[in-house]
Image (cartoon, rainbow, N blue to C red):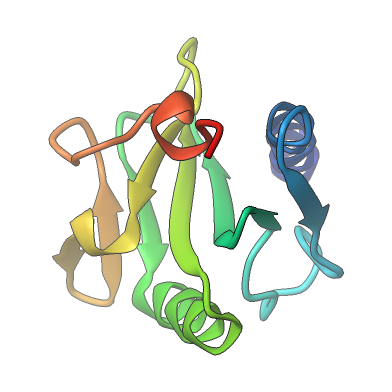
Length: 126
């Protein structure tokens, strides 16, 4: 499966999970534009998250510092909390607040040692 198709598949899968109890939208240009600020926006009872979805076959994911900075700026302007949703092979989604990533040159590393939250931790019913 091509990377774009795999990414879109995981974005749609997460959309469906969140949509069971929260309001969620997939952003225009998600997965197609290099400068899209996030993939999903989810909200419930005043809690808003902007979410960047990443999937990999590797044990770590590197996200450019530029992309993290754009996600953070967009979330601040939107009054939301920025989150990275990661999908590692044969695992459920893991969620990470962007400030828990490890800065490596011009990218942020998310790996086994990163502090993650579960789906229930993030999207529990308020």
